[in-house]
Length: 389
Image (cartoon, rainbow, N blue to C red):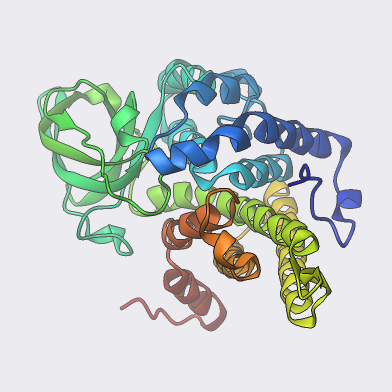
């Protein structure tokens, strides 16, 4: 397959600054050289390519849109989104690692933490010297995080946590977990360090999606942490939901990358695969599929770009992020399925990236708010009526 050169039918590159294009192109080249050659093996083996973490840190990919004073890259949100796009073009597991590290660990520390917590943790996480995870989802509480049963009780100068979190990216390898628990009935954030007595993080095996990503449970059994590990700026369900909006923003961009990879593979294949004495790309039904893919990718690109500009102008609404996450996840999954169809039997082989992206996108469409949950968020936004209960 020829090297990836991007998908830009509407010349959206003209709407980007030189800095934004440079950030994207730098990560695009790195993904092509360092991720693409190894990711199929890791997907098949169910392992994460740990050797890439220092390289990602060197490129400034962790907490990339957070301030430079804490050791971060200080990118604007459009550049950050383009970075997420290119990482997910490599694999959803690679983007998920960076997204969790930045949007779900570094962001809550930056937003809700003390200055001491920020000065200690953010540079370590930005350099990849420490790995973090985000504990919100529970076995019985996914779409309704407010129903969580994990609790924190104040005992002297410590907080004691009890409960279980599930489907936690990076949990088993994390040095620190941002954990959400009910303290006196109010959802509150805590930092729980690896090695703390009463804290274990067993890995979840036998996944058929996000195989090149570490997924875990977090189990707290009378887990006592120092009082200074509470995130004092947190309070109420709105706090973790603000973090999820950061992750959803990255997903809205990242899924475009997965879709572009599938479209690129299908287009290349259609021009090389000969049936009935001609390339299948010359047949009307195949062309219709390719046109659909290109159209939906182009629409998603413009949607994400406008969302990024609104975010950089501090004018973004959470429902706008929901619209982009909902649309772009569904778009990417449909593009992946259509590309699989173009490739025929070869579409299920890891020789091509399509089936890997297709399997990954089943999880990406579900996490950080399912398609239906984002539908209800948008429904409430446009009608003023809450349909969640």
